[in-house]
Length: 78
Image (cartoon, rainbow, N blue to C red; front, side, top):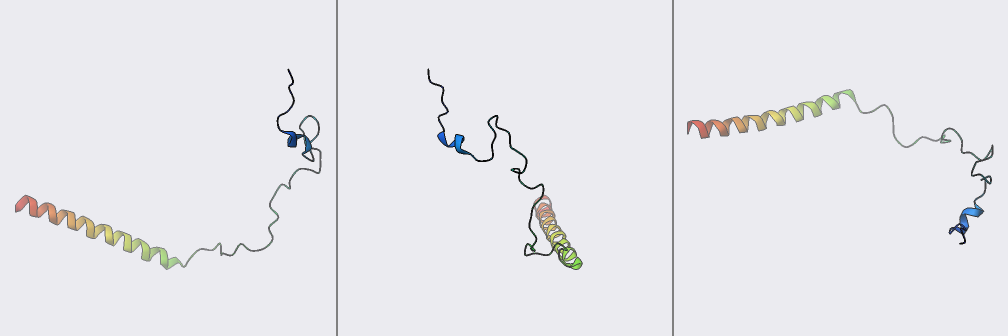
């Protein structure tokens, strides 16, 4: 029985030693080499924006809760 590797390209991979190890100098760098900005600020938005969204969400939840309570009151007391 012939037990050759069915993938012939695997034998042509550069940088691998016969046992599958990688010689020094062939490993990728330990950290990214991006030196340019990524197109966005890391500081985030204005501080007041989060409070506006919080008020909008809580206000909407309050309106929905009042609608449910009103509907339940109409059903209970007719």
